[in-house]
Length: 317
Image 1 (cartoon, rainbow, N blue to C red):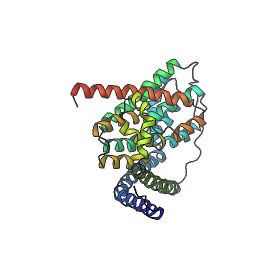
Image 2 (image 1 turned 45 degrees about the horizontal axis):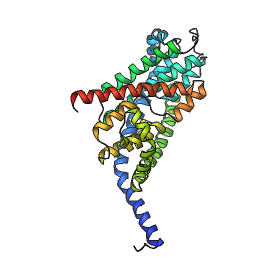
Image 3 (image 1 turned 90 degrees about the vertical axis):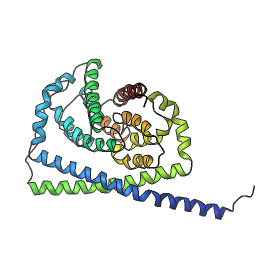
Image 4 (image 1 turned 30 degrees about the vertical axis):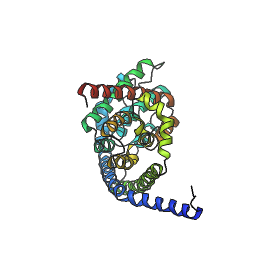
C-alpha cells in the first residue's frame, strides 16, 4: 500500500479541520444567541428583584421550611439566589453567612441539584426533556437530599446564624451600569467557551478520539444506566455545565449521533449531577465537603435514571 507524502497528509488534515469548523459555525451561532438571550434576560430580572428587595422577601417566605434541612433561615437567600441565577450568586450570599461545614455541605448539595433553574431547564427542554418534569425532579431532589443529609451527617447546624448587614443601597443607575458590565463580561466568556467547546466536540468525532473516550468511560456509564454514546455529552456536562455545553448537546442531536431516548436518560442524570469541576471546587473552597456533594448527587441520579428506564420498559418506549 502506497503511503501518502507527508505534505499531502498535512494538507488533508488542514482541510478536515477547516471543514469541521465551517460545518459547526451556523448551528453554534444560533444556539449561542439563544443561550445569551435567556442568560441576559434572567440576569436582568434578578438584578431588579434584588434592587427592589423582592428576592429577600421571597427568601424570608421560604426560610421557615429550611429548618427541616437543619439550616438557618438566612441560608434561604443563598438557595433562592442559586435557584434562579447561578452558583456564583449563591456563593456571594454564603460569604455573608457564618455556616459550619455541615450546614454548608447540605446547602451546597441542594444548590448544585437545582441551580440556574430557568436557563438549564430551557436547555434540557430544547434537547427533548419535559421542562415541567425537570423542574419538579431537580427541586424534589434538592429537598430529598437536604432532608437525608440532615439526618445522616453527624452533629447539628447552628440555626441562629444571621446574614451580615447589606450596607447602603446604590443608586439605580449605578446598579444598572454594574449589571451591564457584569453581563457583558459573562456574554463574552460564554461566546468563547461555547464556540471552542463545539468545535472541539466536532474535531474529536472527526479524528476518532470520541470512540477511545467512550471505551474508557463505558463501565461508569453502565453503572449510571447511560448508553456509551452519551459519554462525550456526559463529560461536557460534568466539566463545563449545561449552559456552556448546550451547543454541543444540540449539535449531537441535530446530527443524529445520539438517539432521543438516550438523550432523555442523559438529561435525567445531568439535571442533578453536572458542573462537577469548577462549581464543585468553588463550593469546596467555601467549606463544603466535596465527596458528599459529588456522591450524594450521583446516588440520586442513578436512582432517577433507572426509574426512567423502568418507565421506558413499562411503556415499551
